[in-house]
Length: 161
Image (tube, rainbow, N blue to C red; front, side, top):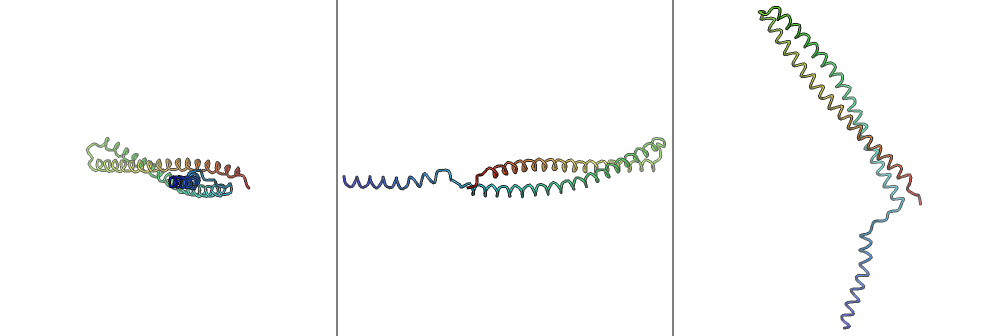
């Protein structure tokens, strides 16, 4: 019986020694307000870095849009001129139906107009993609700014001890 009592007492002591360690390791970590404030400030710095990168990307994309707008204007103008030229040559050909030289010129003008129109369409597509990218970056910037203001208010409300 003495042996059983010794085992029982040892088991109770082991449970009493291990239980606080187990409870403290499973419980929520208690962090001082100062540490919370420092962690929040670190998050704030990270968000500011992200915001700066987004703003930089936005400026680069806006510059790309400006360039594409100029390219689109040139391509549209060129396509319009080519189409007008093809139309004029086609009208001349309809007046002189048997003229092979005029037929060849009209065909080349028509092919050139189609090529310019295709190029203008391609550049317009790039411009559309760039505009979508700008919208996405602006959305990301708004979200990041919102998170920043939310975090700043949290930092302001952390009590100092």
